[in-house]
Length: 178
Image (tube, rainbow, N blue to C red; front, side, top):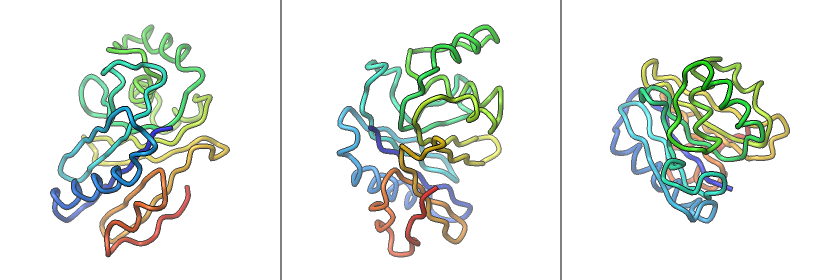
C-alpha cells in the first residue's frame, strides 16, 4: 500500500500548495515506509509515499513521469497485466527505465488518453497530471479497493489516499470518495 496526495490550483501560492502536500503525505507516511517523493510546478503539487513491491530500485520512485516529462503520475496499487501492457507499448516504440507497473501508466495514458483505465486489470488509485495542458485525471479500480478521496475548493482540487489529510488546511472542504 502506498499513499498519494496532491493539489491542483488556478490561483495561489506554489509554496503553500507544496507545503500542504508535504503535510498530507506526512499524515499518510505509515502507508509507504520505503520513501517519499514530490513533483511541484506552477498549478500542481503531487506527493507519494512508497511501499516498494514490484521494482525495488530507484526507477520505481514516484511521482513518476514519461520520458518527456509531460505526464506525471502518483499511483497506489498493483496492475496485474502490466507486463502485457509494457510489451505492447514497447512494440509501439516506448522506452522504459525500470520494471515497475507504475511506469507503464503514463505511457499508456499517452497512447490511449483517459480510456487507458479500461485496459487496467488490478487494484489502484491514481492521479495523472498533464503538465502541458495543466489537467488532472483521478481514477481508481472499479471496485474501489484502493481508496481515493478528493476535495474541491475555490480554484483548487485536493486528493489523497486517506480522508485525514483533508483537515490539514483550514479552508479545505472535507474529502469525498471517488
